[in-house]
Image 1 (tube, one colour):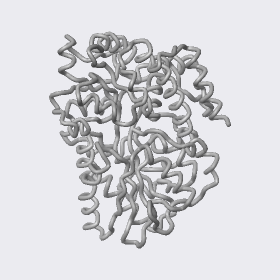
Image 2 (cartoon, helix red, strand yellow; image 1 turned 180 degrees about the vertical axis):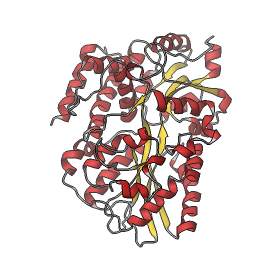
Image 3 (cartoon, helix red, strand yellow; image 1 turned 180 degrees about the horizontal axis):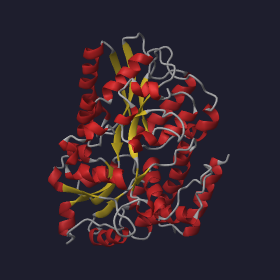
Image 4 (cartoon, helix red, strand yellow; image 1 turned 30 degrees about the vertical axis):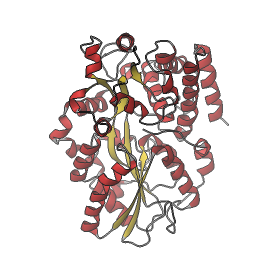
Length: 437
């Protein structure tokens, strides 16, 4: 659930590969490390319907931590559109927080900077042990073969959310299980000012997530085994074209969606303008928009044929939020205590219930709340049919380059310009060239 980056993200690895012991330092406006062993700064990602909502959710929990440990936590909730650039600026300036949230897809890129505390066995032991966490969540916290750069905090997966009334009005009795069914249903719905499927063409991260999943379904990985980009493979091209064709060819996505940023598609869904949306843990946002749980349903993201599974029936990336510590924080012990608190069974149950996500802590998953129909879809997806995005040092460049290429193709579709196999391949070739510069 991350949006666009500035050009700084494109050069994260080359510009920061030599950075060591970054972050921390003297507290300054906009971020800084602890002023004393009794203070921590925490950059939290925007998980709820708004930054203010997150502050209301997190502040009482931080107060609990202070009462238990005597350590005060200074909280800043940062929108996804700003978070990566803020983190990268902190690694170069030394003016960063003690503890922060990162999207799990950034783990390998940020790990390569050397700015984050590695979570070796000793560090995991300090928070109760590595085996408390679901293995796939830990695998999305850093490059294979290295100590993770972060600890899993919230686990997420994509699902298909659908408006029950709009489906009933169109004579559709159940959600689509395949893409052909989704397009056929979508054409029944897309009329009289209503549209079938919401998209966010201006949301680079969402573009990448959808392209990656469709890529897996077309047998493409976007990188080869050595980490070299393969954006122009037949499968990658077919995946991106299929996604943009929901607007360009199938006419089930509103042209205005080409410019949508984070959460705008959810707002249309909540207002009854759009019947379906592909999203991660959207329940809290729908509630904030006035929807009742009975108004919407959840189903697995469609697959080419059959039912979700591994290989070409992968239907989600392994999504989630990780918690990291800047390596040179002046309060390593306090930072680890805070991570331990946030990943405790009690906090995992409370926070993940609130956000509609899945706890990456095994014991917390046993709470009956996570067996609700919508969360069961997410749990089953993570367990059986989700795959991690490439854990390569250039992952953040990949999101920027290919995410922008897809954004430009959405713009072509909205303007009525042809979206062809050749035009898709051309845009992806330019994105691949950017990776090699």
